Image (cartoon, rainbow, N blue to C red; front, side, top):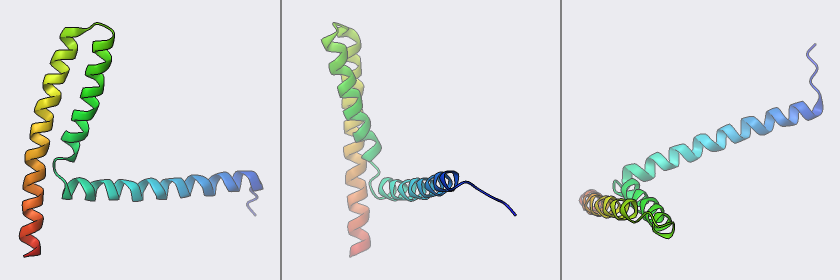
Length: 94
């Protein structure tokens, strides 16, 4: 007969639960991105803008300017893709 300590069993159950939750979150993220094509680019824009601000505060002006420029391009792509996503949703509703 297999004997498992109670604390080990609790840890095992906790690990299985966390795996199940992460799979559910992954599925939700995939569905969200599928419905909102521009979301990754808009999130990238925010991250790059924060990086740009950090570089600006530590006097890396050239890197800050380039990062801000790429962030702007990412925002444009994200907005265009969001418009396409919204148009697709509206076509399915009608």
